[in-house]
Image (tube, rainbow, N blue to C red; front, side, top):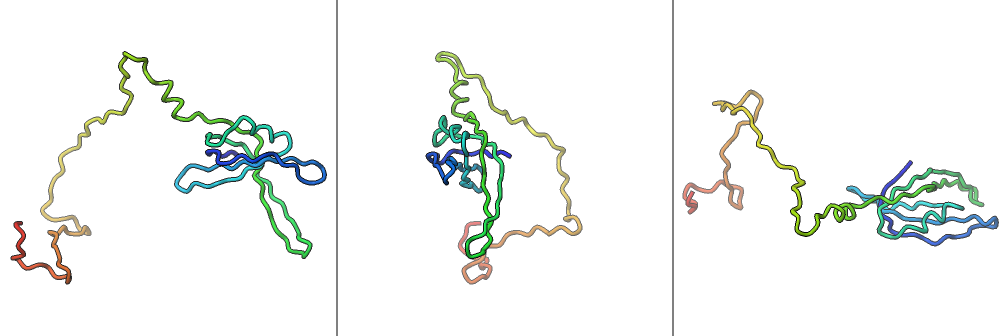
Length: 158
């Protein structure tokens, strides 16, 4: 699986447990209508993969999803998930691409946009009566504060 987002935080490498297990966490913020902060763990030799990345960079991370069951000393069973990253790639941003496209001084920049073409449609035929099942258009009416239509002489010039 993979996910893309902007690096929010890169944590230091931690050694956990008696066997020297190493892990390093990274938080990315996804893009979209509902951005999410996702923590991704890199373990053992993969911790070093994060050394060349900085907060603010947009990256694509390849990961595996791991789940496990744990029973507390009181006998309560809980479940945990780990997002375990194994590859990270830098994604080129539009700022870099825009800098490369700038024309040298003294030369005109070529037009690179979409030009709206005129749209042609056959003329619409007007109907004396609306089709069956369609709401009938009625002249709008203004209402005063009491919900009543104003009298004909409301002082308005139109």
